[in-house]
Image (cartoon, rainbow, N blue to C red):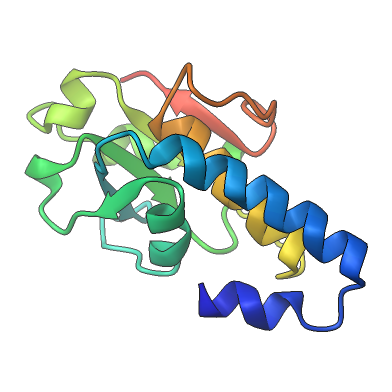
Length: 150
């Protein structure tokens, strides 16, 4: 959680406590769940490792073998949901288990967004909601990310 510690530096105590409570809620719930194998790839189907810590904190396990991934998260810096919706359909492989099970997620990269503690915690919450539907509802689906049916 070192990257979060760095982001928490300079926040007032009340804000730190609020963000820590949000993280603790996710951590407590996923403690009783199996880690979910997740492949995170870009619109060219190349692995993306930028979100590995966030995925781990949200109850996921970064998977490098696409055939072993339960979920595939398409994420690419600088790409919006609209960009991904245009590009992803042509690169999906119908033989991938995540595609067969409709477990494809498109994650927006808001190029205007700073890397702050608040944004990092929100991203962890969002990934937890993606990977554990029904256990978490944070309300950003459709805005920051969508489930994509092939």
